[in-house]
Length: 112
Length: 118
Image (cartoon, rainbow over all chains, first blue to last red; front, side):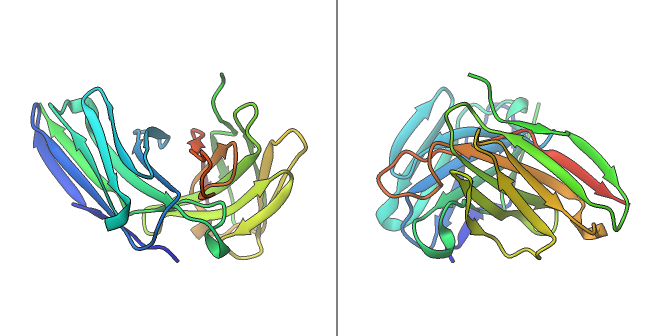
């Protein structure tokens, strides 16, 4: 099945710094989503971005589908940005039908 | 529009018991999928239902089962609980199954059910 790799696994920042999280995937995708998992475990949708570029406030994301990677940018980080960020992909056919395959996540810690 | 709801939020069971978890999708969504999250294995796909039919199943033993009702609500059942079943169980809802080509298929997750098996 499709493989998803996220980097870096851990990231420690000072408040106000910028960061880039990367997601590499091994096959063409019809769904790519970025999530932030809150301390209670819920996955919060950040972006649905199988291709192209989107921005939402201090966050933006770019997916280059032909090169099989996606980037999540966080600018002017705040302590509330701390948590785990997941990239997940979906592709058609066979054992991939109806499911998202998740990366292992990036643990972001923002210090005041 | 109300989000995805899951009940119960927390559950404590003992080995050998069985458990049923419930998921109510966003109104109008017909696809519901289930995931298990553990510290060691990360987020793993359990199964997906669309229009009351299981369309895909992950690599889990037969003790894990599910169903979907005509109103799109879904339940999953775990029988003969083992210690290793302790996990956060998340369900996701969407208009169509994840990964379909050319169709908007964003997934929305519920708050999860945290199951502890003693």
